[in-house]
Length: 324
Image 1 (cartoon, rainbow, N blue to C red):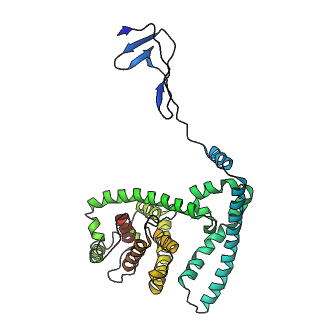
Image 2 (image 1 turned 135 degrees about the horizontal axis):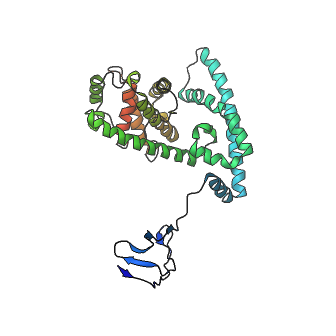
Image 3 (image 1 turned 30 degrees about the vertical axis):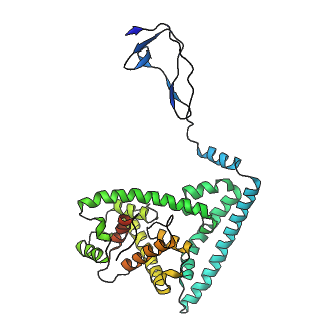
């Protein structure tokens, strides 16, 4: 090593996000071709000009600073109307249930209202209090805990962000499913033809039965379907069964009224709650995805196990839908 008693450091242009060595004015440096300038056997201190991630409080403050008074009034009106709509939907649901008990057959839209309005109504009081006390944190709650927000209080852009996050989670689960499926000798082509799916259901009659699936896989299934993954194995199983009971009724109503009767927004929501992509796809592809699901789910013989229904969606995610 050569002695470097006098070292002159020239100023370095600092670029955000790039690490730099901070020079120390000292005559005690030595040069090594392997590690550069060292002092007393240690490297010079390293620092970064990149900004540290913001805390939750800083995010709230940043969001509030960028929010104009007009925007705040607009959001306040939106949340007020959304909370009013929760109450109106709950009253409509009561009347529909009375008519249903007298033999009235619900339409698909009415069934959707009866199924979802009670969940929104349970969120009315806590969300309403939060909107009055801390309205500035509502966008963060929608982003990090959407289950606590009534569906009538979510904007279209917020809903799209939620669906994109769900798709990201599903993409991770899909990669894990594809890795594990190699060992079980299941391939993507097994889900591209209805007859092959039927053969798969016969080949693995008990493997995809929810009663035979361990807790970790049930958690993954719940996460993939957008359900809560908290609880015991039995709670997860019942949660999936209840969700598929709802989907069975909904599938029959869609089959009765026709997929063409659904609006673009309804197609997106229907695909999303069945474990399929609901964003960045044209209506024709959303209809085909839904048709494929309904045909597979309502197939009488052989009956496709619920676990295989979820498994199949993970397999074909990102593929062009067409089970024929």
